Length: 402
Image (cartoon, rainbow, N blue to C red; front, side, top):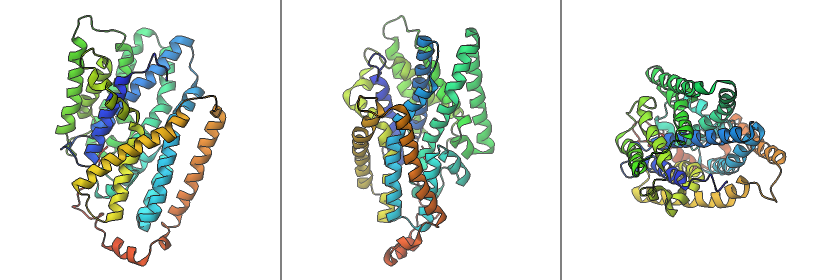
């Protein structure tokens, strides 16, 4: 982490995003639109990835794709592999054969960064089977990873080959095309609009635009505080007013995304900036990736263990446990591999090891799917509970858009 480029306020924004998702998924604080936290993450990613690419191009006149993707693997894979492995173990212990098949399949697709395509093909995101899909939330990680494959080369070509005066029009055209695609898909394939990258690109690009807009700062004192307040309002209000009935993404997503972009632009405001840069929000923001990874599997596996609706006390406990486990995974897994140290593995060895571990997890997961979920795992007394389980039936509330 370059201390000259580190933005604690962005970690603060991450904390707002991840807590919005937790409160929504756990049905807390009446946050019926907390799924917009994922869109805030997309805006943040668009900003950070674009800034990294543009900085390197302007500094060195070139961009090293190999180093970029090694950084992404170091950042994402260790915590991801840990969560997926533990999820497979929990599914083995708690799930019915049918649920085990589904969970095993989703692990393979998530490892290949295409779980969003799997869940799009399976069903609507708000379907009642969401409560037995522990990796359903990984659709957003797949969208981000697909963006990482598409964006560096695209931006490199635009910045290095196109005339400078065409940079803004080209990026604007791409964003408008993505937003238009989202609106069209909402009418013909709402699940596709929700899950697939083309209808989400404009969200990343709203963050990317801040890289250039941020070079022009307001001249008048107090303007940044006003812009930051507006940005936070544009995030918080949809988090409470939106619901699963909202046509989303498309134009509805543009509001919280604009709020996230404004918040990034003005996040270092001299007065209100402390809302984002205080030690608590910064800490939760740093743990946000691991918190996000663990929170939904915790909810799903607790429901599978208890065979009951989750009470308010249990939801609060699961929220606290998600933050605790997120912190532990950040300290014990993410921190150990995220940054290159003297004792770190070299880039080729690290990437090779990450791919090998992914394959070692994917192969047994696929074999479990092929073996119809290993029905022999289930003792007779638990089989009776599974037969009486009502989590798949219509009418049981499932709180999950992400």
